[in-house]
Each structure stands twice: as C-alpha cells, then as structure tokens.
Image 1 (cartoon, rainbow, N blue to C red):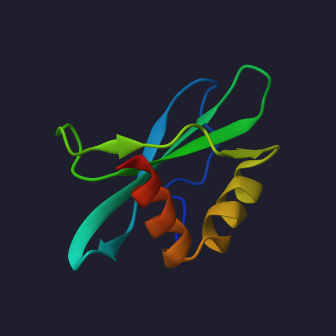
Image 2 (image 1 turned 60 degrees about the horizontal axis):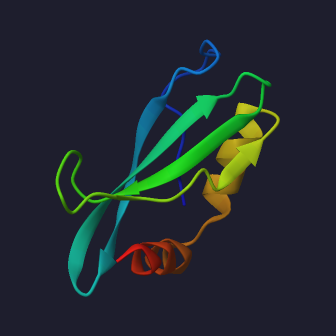
Image 3 (image 1 turned 180 degrees about the vertical axis):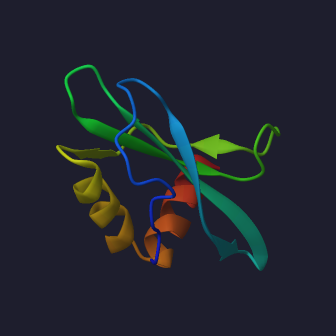
Length: 94
C-alpha cells in the first residue's frame, strides 16, 4: 500500500493526526480509509484505522493496532498491509 505521511516533522506528544489512505472495495462499494496517528506520552507512535465516511454512523475504527518506536517504522507497518488485510479488518468491524 503506497501510503506516505503528509508531514515530515515530529508532532508534539499526544497530538492526533489523520491521514487519508487509498480506499478499498468491499462488496463492490468503495470504502474510505484513514489512519489516525499519535505519539503517546511514552514516546511510542500509535495508530488506528478508520473506515467509512468521517463523522457518519457508518464510520468504524480499529483499536490502536499499530505501535512503533518511530514514525517511519509505523508507516512501514502500514505500507506492509495489503487490501485483503484491510478488507478483513473492515469485515471484522461490521
């Protein structure tokens, strides 16, 4: 998955930043995907996947399933996901 961070400087601890990712198709419908990233007080980068249109009843979210000691390592984990993994995550939230 060709996701890239939209910023290149470190953000203050606890600030949540949401990045748009390429959508997936599920049952023939496009599903918007976003990644919510934050740096916790202990310096660890954490991220969760947000599915569906922002602010709607259809929006679903995973727990903070991404965890890394650096932001580039977190993005590498996101890039390692394939569409079928994202579809399975989305299906598990329905």
